[in-house]
Length: 212
Image (cartoon, rainbow, N blue to C red; front, side, top):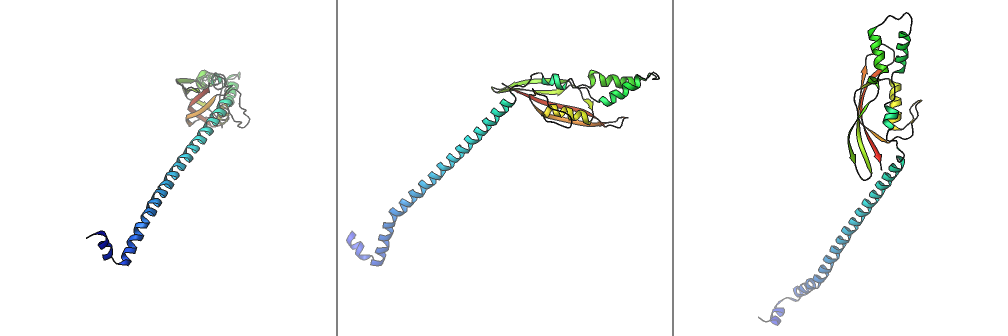
């Protein structure tokens, strides 16, 4: 059967349908490539948006790092030694015990004397031990852990955190030269005390970060 006979054997209505289908094939192909290109463009747009967001985040982070570095540029390397380790705590109790022991009628009491020696000696002062120093191109940091716990009252805590957090708390004012200090660990236990004021056992660990 030749091609002419084949066409003549197909009803005209069916032939028109076949021709319409054949005519639509290029359109379907064009639409397929069109939507494929749109999908590719959408993917490219998403990538550009992601890159833009990443770049903005990086820029903000760099700006924050720059501001932090600028804020701590004049930090004192010996800030902890000068301002934290020099503190003396429980001043009210010390004054009370000193008043007792200086009284001419005071009968030597080992408990009172031992307590006074503890409060006025090095055992009840902050003493930090440095861990390993971690160095990056932008800063160096070290953990500072208390060698032993200390006893403090609420007023002492305000003073300590004023110096650590660089904020005014009550009557205590920040001191210039503070490096970036971050509290890594903090433990506070209430201690028995014969006076009216509350006494706490304090132990903590700090991270000290100094910028280059």
